[in-house]
Length: 96
Image 1: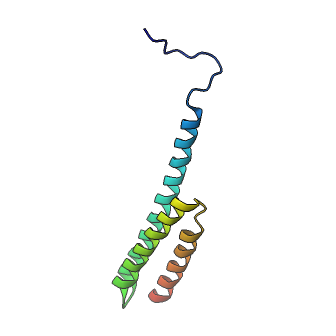
Image 2: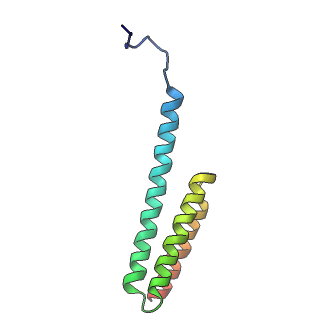
């Protein structure tokens, strides 16, 4: 029979656990940013007097692409964060 117990201070698969944790954090940040894009798009859909469909769907599509690029390239979230701020400001101007 195989021995499944712990053998002291050996770290079995620590690199795998670290990679899983890093990917979980990256996925959580990406999901949060996508949810924020959805919230801003919902505001554009509901309150913008004209061009609300173009503004909302355009922001969602560009935002999702920016999140995918950031998640794949660097994980620093500068592109998607900056685009989220710009999208929010444009929506705020369109609503007012």
